[in-house]
Image (tube, one colour):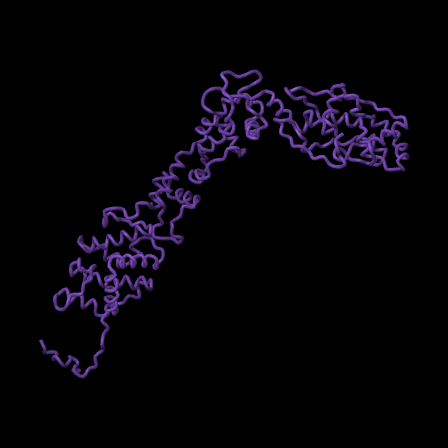
Length: 516
């Protein structure tokens, strides 16, 4: 036994009694002290985590925990060397003495420090390889519990967890493949959808096998599966598929953006959005057994006016349904006033005007305009109950022929009383003079006769420049009397107030364009 040396002399012939010795700290010998105590060679050092494991498992576990400790500190496998065996035992014993919570914190720190990877095996490196190769027993069961707790806490997906633990450590998380199965989509489409709804992992960086909240994915699946194709959506709305596509192209009905992302060109529509449109159009409409007089069904109204224009009018309130047939709420049950359709077809506000708008067009009060109509000087182009409709061309022709005393006063920059007095002195009589309640409501003069005497009128106002053309808001105003008889440009009517169900806005009165 001692043929290579003695108790006091080494094989290299060094005198061991003469060598200096270094004192080691107690912490550096804890692993050895625990092992000696378990063998009965010294006082037993109690470590609850290790006491419940067989001694062989303890001997294997301590340096493995030490390697994991070094890995979580520097994030590199290559820096763990064989020469660090003593350091591994010291670090491993520190972790073991912190019990289960210390081991779980160490695993969590390793996963956080080591950065993104594709699997738990790559994150934990050799430690996971050793753990996965352990035979069934106390050590494997204990480590499986610690890994499962850590994985569940971080929301990480653990591939093949069934081999190690009895229950899924992350039951509230799903992988991209599982999300695709829930959504019934390919992996590429699933990624597009999850990106569109910002359903990303809780960890801002790329984590191991990025996982997604199961409840959010399931709710998203219900949303996608409830969307309707064009034919089904059209049936719910009460239109044909062709009409429904026209409404979608006009932006009246918006497709579901999540479904559009999922299914590409195959547009789908959310039932809630269709129900919201029906609620807006059908809510409060009385139910009728039969269509009343002067009412047509929605389908016929759409043929006359166009489905897009009709629905816009219903949404904006310019067309109001007079009732709906009994049955489920849908557009095909609506009854529309034929007069409303006739008004919409007339292009009110451009080619035709109602009485109120026509009065504004001629810069008259409504009462004065009504007097002109009653006297037969203006005739409605048609009557759409309850509105008298006037053609803009007829109004423009009347304005080119006549000028009223208020407009003359504005053109000369004087009062109506003074202009009437001056015209009377010259001898010009009004062509139209209408009374209301024993007072003169309005006077109109022939524009040509005023043009012929414009020089005489101008002299009476200190040679003030004469402009008897219609006002600037309706046609150009010029001080040259020769232009008074010229052809005036067609007046532009913008923002003229309209009767209900026509929807033309009210024009503000300017200081130089007051209505008489």
